[in-house]
Amino acid sequence: MVKFLKPNKVVIILQGRYAGHKAMIMKSFDDGTRDRPYGHCLVAGIMKYPSKVIRKDSTKKTRKKLHVNCFIKLVNYQHLMPMCYTLDVDLKDVATANCL
Image 1 (cartoon, rainbow, N blue to C red):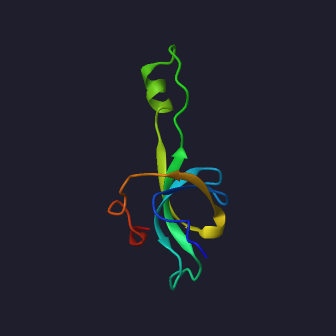
Image 2 (cartoon, rainbow, N blue to C red):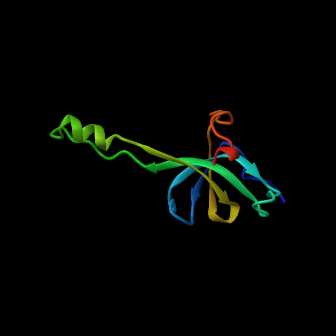
């Protein structure tokens, strides 16, 4: 079987708290581990997207609307839907599975 869930691939999370959110695969574990005996991967994504800003908003409200929240999570392969996009960003040194 062809492995198409590779690092830097953009996916949509289908299950759980972050369902419907876009994420990027940072590291994949095809054979699983001792704790998780199924195929899974480490993803980083956007939890809260920036909102639309209008001219009459105050500076405080504009800053709040432009705020972006991120998440890092281990996700089962069956809870991901791959997209056709890949990113050219190297995030291997940013986070590891041990930091969770």
